[in-house]
Length: 376
Image (cartoon, rainbow, N blue to C red; front, side, top):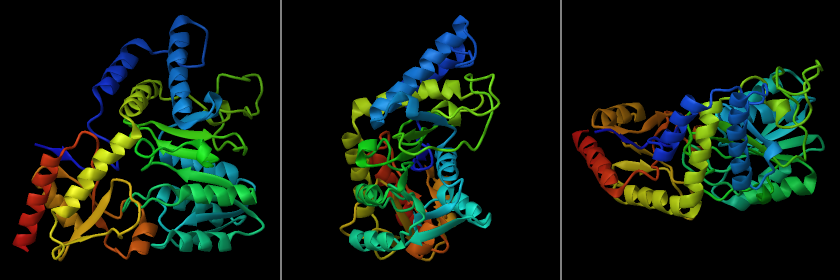
């Protein structure tokens, strides 16, 4: 028996419809989308566009502003580096993933980009006030996660969007832990939404999305063949071509449509309610004297729970739980800023259910955690 509670890293299992779509894509749609006019390419191009249209409808965008990437990190790098190419000031929050923190830091090392980190407090108003105070005359972008990947803390992203709109600042949102679970749309005020395809959207690995409202031009980080303007040595300046150089992951993209359709049919409200119920059940079955749960009463969370067994390193706890058939991720979760904010220098164990988990599996996991506590 293997039970996956590491769905914040990637959802598994995938819906049957996604598995079928992936198999069909490999067996039937082997053309190179956008390259050539023969029937194989045209059929593949049509299927890729179907996914682009589906993603646009789901997030409230226009299809040409939907860019396919390899993952959320890929999308965030495109957005951050593309917006900050000519320099300026950028603000990030203190719970950002390394997919935000590292490219921002790398740009600052080059000399013409400066960054500030807005501390995340338990009070949203205090966080927003601190964010406003960091804005400078040359602030070009604010990059914030919608929901943190360590604790699931949901930041006030709509209020951040309002701040950005009032100051003509580009708002780049990391939706990796939110899209497919929360109802996120460009109409929330987001200028550039970056997300993975393989997490809450239930697509295959190797899929991600950058979705723009078209208000800010994104300078390409990679140049190459796009299937358009081929006589010109200058990279196309229109989306999605400007950011989609080279052959896209056609099989993964085609299957991603089925993942988005699965989420749309089930409904994000229903998905969130189910996963959140499992998180509440999980927390309720833990012994608070032996297990520390990193959540604050009154705050909003995505269905992710970070915890530690008191007196046991997180990596050891996760390893022992894995031996018992339960897969949870331990450590820093590629988010050292978040753990510094949380005060968990050694990291945590992270519980992250999906729609395919159930209460019996949660009971089984908490029984094993109880045994670990008793053996200490």
